[in-house]
Image (tube, rainbow, N blue to C red; front, side, top):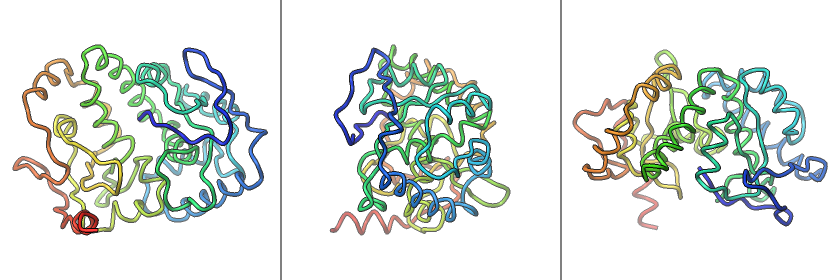
Length: 289
């Protein structure tokens, strides 16, 4: 959730909220062209793969406009849609700051963009991941409410010392979630949406497990940050995701999870709703390299 982001200039000073100017006018023509290239490639690939609400968000926020989005213009449109705004941060933000922003309907985004040589692989999130990947769904009222609820839950989890468990919920939904769309599966997680390779892998590859979403199951499951996922969790709808989050009594749930072992990413439990039992071929091939 809170990652160091590569900056193209020296990190400016900031206040307790870590907000800094985006400095939109300082972007170079090459940086704008890199955004446009990434945008065009992902938009074309995602048409049949991504949840329709994502494409609707692109339209509502006019994100097809050439060049890196200006956060002030983007926030004006987003505020009209769902009361959210996008704010620039210099890089690593403390958990408390991250959750406070989400709870107040502010999405923090790095302002640097990858180089043209990094189109297909990037170790750290950049503005394309943060803005293209995350922001379109913030124009959806239900998902926008979920993100605020998550921020509020983060403040409570921090007080209880259970951030590591709650972070798994964010990872397997906001970053790498799949959603049912009739008889098909679609992607909605920003980590998939902003990745050319994982946009294909998450839906088409036989390697990963695809398991029906259960909030306790998700929060018990480890995740990996260095490769494609070995397991994806599939929600029925944004409405159901929000309902499960609001209905969960997290205090007793954290106590229950503390007494249970963490689950490895490739584990399938007897009670899981398995949509796809993966071969794990990709992970096994990476392990022997």
